Structure formats: structure tokens, C-alpha cells
Image (cartoon, rainbow, N blue to C red; front, side, top):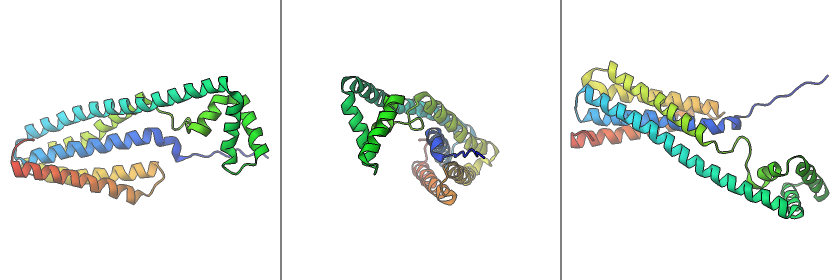
Length: 231
């Protein structure tokens, strides 16, 4: 009886998971920090909401643009390396075959077997084999600029929205306190979800995200208190 064995690896999520966690974390931390800092300068609710909303819009656009440019640079590098490898397969196929076989012998495969594997992979998909074994480019790691940009922008907005909602339901003279407490809870939840999705320790993931969020909010609160102006 044949039993199909299917495995699901966390690495398959790494492309979108990194952008999602980064975007949501930045959305929560930066927006909450702006709100806490402005609230510490003792303005009205309207000013706090305006500053937080401006931070949400600017942050989402910045995250999208930054991710797109960064990942596009990675994509350009991958494309250039693949073009070079494609030409080398045409110009010096024998040398490339030996180079591919050498990647297997370095991992413990004996010479004749490594050469046979290299030949079979070359017949099946020469460029794909060299991309994986020499360049480390795989389907799960390949750069996707548009996906990274959209994911980062959307998750930034999702992360920035809760602190703004807390402003609306908080007493006017305690906005900073309520936003700070709620944000730490949001960050702990985000860290836990990110760690769970990536197969890592939940407590550790929650703690590291919450710690840096607390530091960021404390820093902006100090600035607002010391200068007593909207910054």
C-alpha cells in the first residue's frame, strides 16, 4: 500500500512572513510612539489623532517603497547572477558540469555518484540546478518585490490602526497611558503569532517584540515631556 507523505515546512512562509511581521511591528511601534510622544506634550485629542493618522499614512508608504526598492535590488542581483550562469552553461558546459558535481562531493557524495547526479540534473534543468546548488536561489527564497511592498504596507496599516482606535476610546487626559498599555499587549500578541507561524518559541518572540516597543514609546514620551511641544 502506497502512503503519500506530505511535509509542510515553515521556511515556505519566510518570504511573506518577514515582511508581514516587520510591517505590523513598525505600524504598531511607530504610530503608538508618535501618539505617546504627542500626548506627553499635552495637546488635545484632535492633535493626537492627526499626528497618529499622518504617521500611519507616511509609514505605510515608506514601508512599501522601502521594501520594494530593497527587494528589487535583491531581484536585480539574482537576475544578473542567473544570466551569467546561463551564459556559462552555453560557453563552458563541461566546466559547469564539474562545478555542479563538486558541490555534491563537498557534501559527502562520492565522485562518480556526484557526477552522475550532476549529469541527470543538467539534463532535467541545468540552470535550475546551478541556481540552487551554486547561488542558493530557490523558489522559497527568490525575491518578490511587489509582494513584499504590498504585504509591508497592508500590515503596517493593520498594526497602526489599533493605537488610533485606543485614542478614540481613552480619557483625554490619559491617552498616553492607555495607548502604552494596549500597545504592549498588541506587541506581545504580534510577537507570539509571528513566532508561532515561523515555528519558533512563542514566549521569546513575544518578549523581544514587546521590549523594543516599550523602549521606543518611553523615548518619545520623554521627548514630549521634556520639550512640552509637538515633535
